[in-house]
Length: 409
Image 1 (spheres, one colour):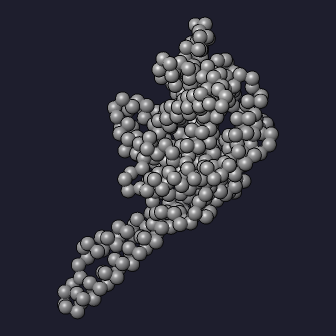
Image 2 (cartoon, helix red, strand yellow; image 1 turned 180 degrees about the vertical axis):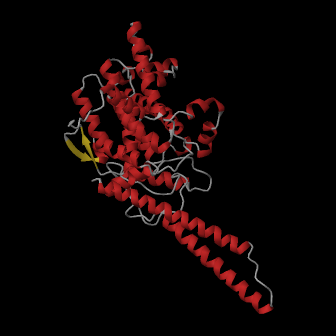
Image 3 (cartoon, helix red, strand yellow; image 1 turned 90 degrees about the horizontal axis):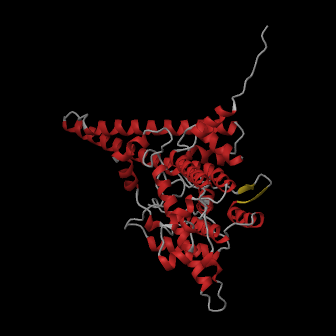
């Protein structure tokens, strides 16, 4: 008899599968940074002082292009490899939650805000009336790591998890994770820009707590870009994720309209950052019914146990509507019988049937979500993390498993 032979996929197959699972924008940024480094290596280009972020040159010669060239160039092979290996899991998770176009806009926004914070801090330190330190004005910062630190803060805020693993050695509270990485990289590496990484953390917190709301467009902006003709080839790619194609979960700040109490939200966020040593999300039970900063079904990641979901509210509203319409129909039927007129089976019956169908389909979707959640819990994942991952994957069990495995790794 032939023995059962179990064969494992080869390294090229595994690499292809790994690369196929990376969304469009994340893979494009990885490829662009890798190609730029290879071209510089083959061409012998090492004049990074011409393209790095140098505050003195930005101020004196207004070389604004350095804001964006600095994030695409890297100084060494290890530099680009470590940055891209850190970008892939972070970008993959954020792109699945936000969408491809929204993530690209976020990267541009973070690159700009990091440079502005960098420039402001360098100017303040250099022109300090007590004792000036002009060396920060002449520090040349290069690499994608500033944006990566911002994405670490944003992803930690969206995930809602309580602890993070540092290089698989020990766990730390999630709110301290970015700061501990900042200190460790500064101690372990000799040529690391402390100010560049610090500004990345500041930009991440500024985004997470709504300080960039007026710089973020609404969903219609992303929808218009996705429907444009010049992106048709990109949208057809399997890794391209539409911003308007599914629900966005978690606290995703977006444009504040005129009906939102923007001043109260911004002042509350500022007060929260000032009064705490580390910004920490606090959820209350008395929240407004709808906040335009948080698109989607108004479910906060990590707080699903304490807050009722909008599905329950919609069930109650649908049931109330069904009761109201049924009472109206019964009243019309009674009056019609009393007057000798046959009741009409037109508009009221149509409304009743439509709402009954809507309620049945909604309950069915909730049952399907619960079944998938039980499946993930049965596989050994924590219920809260499984629910967050399943929501971020828009109900796709396979993607949810990938998210959970990446978090555990």
